[in-house]
Length: 293
Image 1 (cartoon, rainbow, N blue to C red):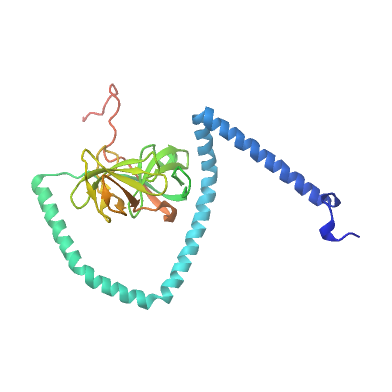
Image 2: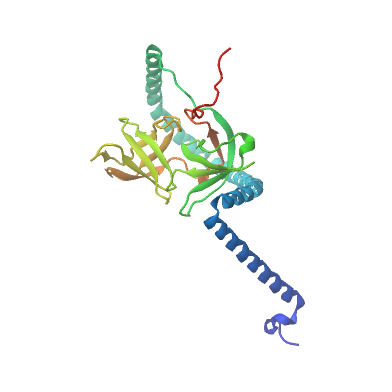
């Protein structure tokens, strides 16, 4: 009887069936990939529909896996917190002693700001949230930067709605399905967000680079100096994004155009908030408008 390592594939029917099934799956995968490639090239709307259909099917599974991963991270964090609780407690007390004067100063500034707004009769407009959805996946290394939400048209999400995280702006919705939505991230090359510098209100543009960073570009001025650490927030120009949402901070000093890193990192987030546009788009001309009775 020949040794096991000398046996050929034809010696076992199980191995024959396994290899045959592998060939069938490989050929089927190649055919499906070719069909999708042709569809994306010659019929982009059809390809987008197929992509959102697949996303609607896989979103619940991805959401469940993300929940399991979040639970595991929570358990690990609880163990680490218990082990290092004493050192963290001492560090938090030192930080509290440092930030208490700053907090009092910030409260004073906020009070003066509210009083001045009342005197000037300035009315703030706040974007209305639509839904809080789970970020089930994001493209962290491809040339295009997208994320997938496990909520869609059935939850009120529409194309163009801004998406925010706890640390700042994430992007905007570009495609929607029944229970899934595709988000264009700030770092994508098609993303352009009007911003302003917090320390002096300098207007600028945050444009995605496709490599996880954004470019901060000056607007209507030349020889503008940007310093490392400069913070930029949304300006509200264009009416899509609510003013004051954190966007990015400069990582290296320069002039006119510098690189910046976004505050929100979709690959580390569990949930995101979908909002309505800051200033809703007016209806097309000719449509009846509601009148007060």
